[in-house]
Structure formats: C-alpha cells, structure tokens
Length: 142
Image (cartoon, rainbow, N blue to C red; front, side, top):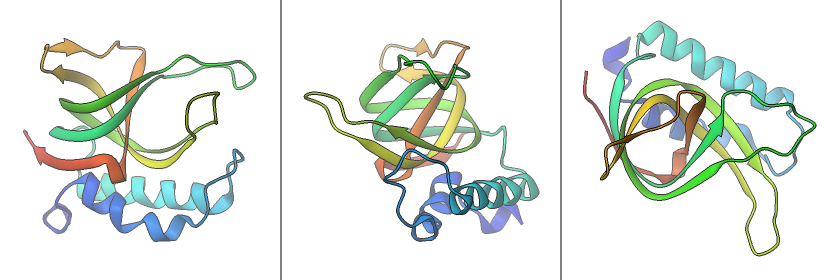
C-alpha cells in the first residue's frame, strides 16, 4: 500500500474536503473520524516514523502536552525548511489575538525536526505542526 501514498502531505490534502467547517474550538466527531482514518492509512502504508525534507510557508512548534485550561506558548515559523520524522496528523485551532489572526488547520505533524538554515533542532518536548496548505514540497529522505 505504501506505493500508493506519495507522502503524508498529499494524503492529508486529499482529506481537506472531508473536514467541513473547523472554525470552532470544539473537537467534533467528523474531525476525530478523519484523524483516525488518516492515522490508520499511514500505519498500514508504513509511512509513520519516516523522515521527510519539507518546505513550508508556515509551521507551529507546540508543546507535546499542556493543560487545556491554561494558555500555551508556541512558536510560529514563516518560510521554514526542515527534515523531521512524520508522526501523525493533527488539527490545530489557535484563536484570534489582538493584531494577530486565527488559525484553524489540518496539519502534518513531526518530531525530531532539524530546522534550516541554522541546523537547530526543535526542542524534544515540542511537535512541529505544519498546515497541509502551507506545504510546498515534501520528499522522503529515508
């Protein structure tokens, strides 16, 4: 089956229409179903835990875990190239801030990320969430 899936970006992009409206902060059954289905496909295709070199216009480094009732700090990247291990898919929902914008997106999610051009590693306690529509190129390096 892995020969049918070019990369997690292409697979995720094909599921965007199935999500419908993700503009609210509550998780809904449709989102949960899409994430489970995507994860099952990747597990069967054995593409989890593979390294990819990816170019994206936006990405978010978000802690692995945090209390849902508290504010969370995250780092937003613009125009990022990186090599990282594909973990799964996620849906991020970042609220509207004064002077900022809201983000609601299906993401390809990575760990062990080596960020270019400075060759810095992402902190081990963070995952890199990259909106599917922000990815311009994704190539396996395994």
